[in-house]
Amino acid sequence: MKWARLHAALRSRGLIRGQEDNAFEHLDIVGVAYDSRRVEPGQVFVALRGLRVDGLEFVGEAVDRGAVAVVAERPAPTSVVVPWVIVENARTALAVLASTINEEPSRRMQLVGVTGTNGKTTVAFLVASIFEAAGVRCGVLGTVGHRIGEDTRPASHTTPEAPDVEALLRSMVEGGCRACVMEVSSHALALDRVSELVFAAGVFTNLTRDHLDFHGDMEAYFRSKRRLFELLPSDAPSLINVDDPRGVALTETAARPVTYAIDSPADITPGPLSFSLEGLTFDVRTPRGSVQIRSRLVGRPNVYNILAAVSTATALGINFDAIERGIESLKGVPGRFELVSAAHEEVTVVVDYAHTDDALRNLLETARPLARSRLITVFGCGGDRDRAKRPLMGAVAGRLSDVVLITSDNPRTEDPERIIQEIRRGITPDTVHASQHLVLTIADRRAAIVRAIELARPGDFVLIAGKGHENFQVIGDQALPFDDVVVAREALSRRRSNSGVV
Image (spheres, rainbow, N blue to C red):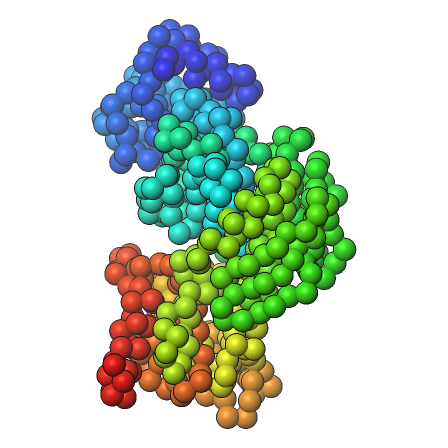
């Protein structure tokens, strides 16, 4: 693509500052880069000002690797000889350039954005399954991975940087996808990673405490989430959970709100609910009639996720038969109330991604009526993240569990024992579930999972929370192989061997 076209795209958005240099209009550009270590010859390098480093420090490296133009918020050093464009906002410019060079793929598909604190991944999987049941090939971008047709790629971020998002969407279009469901994180919205995408619909699941180490407070966190609905075209539906107070506020600004709820009046609501470890059965009432739900997903939080998916599909005109088949065909979502134990096991073991106090509360409240005896919870909190949620998670675990094993999550550069003690402060005598309540602290996550399964009596329910689908543990600056599901299965196998059951 010629530099002139990219330059024109920046100019049309009013991003360019200062005098323009038109001498390089016929320069060929093959791509856009924001990481100097990944620059390839012929790309334009966008120097982002990050939280810890400034991209301007790496312009020399980018040029050495073959960058043929630079976009930045400040003037060029005298030593730089490639074309240099000064822009008002480098992140917005990155999104514009990425969209333009990838031929605006979001305009060639139905793109559904899902945002909120909890439920994004499950809603994305449900909506994608509905699209597929309707005969529409659908990609998925999110926490568990990026799915393009039959190909699944690992995800380092819930929502990648704009060039990565646009390239993935282009690959989907080229692979025959006519729809995509993507999780849209608050970081992505705050950092302009999705500002050039054209969404066919936006979904709001809920808003509870998370990422305050980045956003600072709940108001800033909500403003970031709200940004998705400000980006929607005026005719695109906003699917909003109005059992959440922030959802109610969102309906006042959304151009085309479609509401769903369990307890509040809404456009889309459930009939009587039937819960079991085998799944959910209920009807969904919509303005177009009733949808019969049969799902293998478990618990009240998944009722909300299913309502969100039904709301989205209904608003986009998908027929009820495809909605019902799509929901019923989804066997589960990796790391989301994932049943690890077999039906014949004497204990039930579930792995879940819950890593906030609200998500942990929902998880434990889901498990409690399914447990035939005690509820045993294994969890920790991530290092180098919001410290204030640690005692809150401790309080929730203590109040709703019979046995708690506090362990490491991803400690990163923090001392795991200090994180554990901060969690432990939330478990006080007036917050524990029962007089025989047991709290253990075992920093080694593998040892904690093994101990929980050893402690379990017949009929007990063991929840392993916090990491879900992740197959690594971040200790220091290393991501070491670790999978809760694998460790739990190994412990269950040893338990069977020790009991003489094969």
